[in-house]
Image (cartoon, rainbow over all chains, first blue to last red; front, side, top):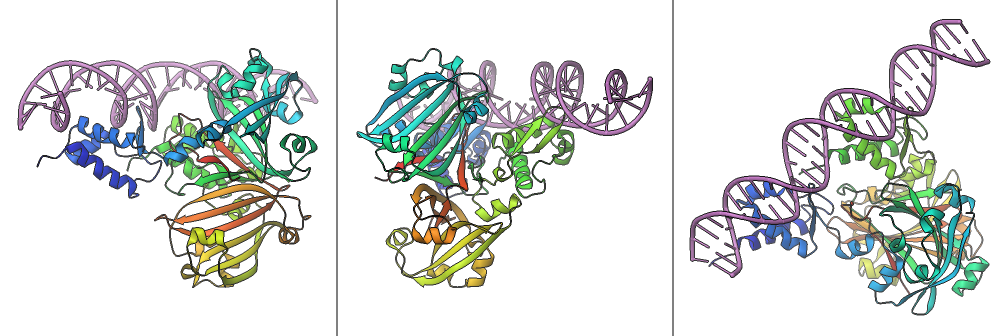
Length: 245
Length: 245
DNA sequence: GTTCTCACTTGTCCTATACTTGTCTATGCG
DNA sequence: CGCATAGACAAGTATAGGACAAGTGAGAAC
């Protein structure tokens, strides 16, 4: 009975990865180490690892190594994506409607982050299956927003329109009572609870390029955060608690 | 197991900063001191410090030094920790008060997660500097809670009392209006906005062992989440958006 | 008081080494 | 032809060690 070597190795690695020997986010031994450990050639080891990658179990970065991938669902949604993407992924028809498109002096809180100077302020409402879903205000520095048109902003998310590569974001989640504007746009009573998310998006070089405020009606929305096993994860999960009092 | 040195150093510094060894606003040892202390090169030390800066824990000024970031309550843990730890770390006196301690039939939503059978239900209020800060209800399966006393629960967080190793948690963050019970405990008006966090904690083997509901008054609290740069992150942060409608 | 100097700090660049994955070729075996 | 071994090279990463510029702060000199 002839067995396929890389399938054996893949099965063994699958067991080790799934069995928690390598927890999410941790590095696997290098291909060279695995070569000696399994007594197989590097090509064979790589075929086994490629198999595991195609299953979404592990991933690699050149020059760095192989590591255990997070839960595929988490992975897909954990990236810096738009809410529309996430809705699309769950089969909900998402729609954007621009209420307001103007270059203005930013509010103080926005100026603190983006620096002085005029900004493009876009007010939008997002609809999911025709229902108002989120009231969004985006502020973007004037020099980055020069080329943007109202139609473009209505059609595509900001992330796709800006001519810079994104570096990450910090999001603050809080609760608040719906303001009259929120209530009018979201079709909810004034004072009813809403989730308020303030997101600061940074470019790859670390400069803040986008500030956005998302208001969600509480009854329709919630955030889910996975806190990884504390001691095992390379990247800290990044949730922290803040008192703004 | 391969490890990345700057990640280890960052983890150690994170612990020292969060643990109060360096008080808010205080200077950290200079990079030169840290290189000798950790036996690493300056490049490595700086990568660790840059990591901590990206998390908002520390900051630096040329010619001056590295210091713990200004906002005292921002220097939280990130890890799967208790809110009390995070308050302690920032010098706020945290206090737990048990309101209710009973073995009961769980609500349906809790039974869905923990399975059938009686559970220990503990209602608590957390105080920060004497002010009610969070209203917490914890449900724990009866067989795990047999040895727990009311005094123990008042004294220590659940995480330290359970005889199992923790595997991670999933936390849901939503907004709601304060119920009469919330209002009475937190000293806020009925109907005012609150943050409602439902956390399911799992053991290392993946079985759910704890369900807890945390109610925070909106005006005092918010969550901060860092979404890392997509392509550089090993373990995605794992925030996802859900629609519960 | 003001100004200067000097020690010390971080910010930014460089070179160099070792190690990793990504990709390719050549070869043997059934 | 698929599977395996062996090797070579490119590209990326981690770390060490160094050099220099620029900012800070305290004390000396005036």
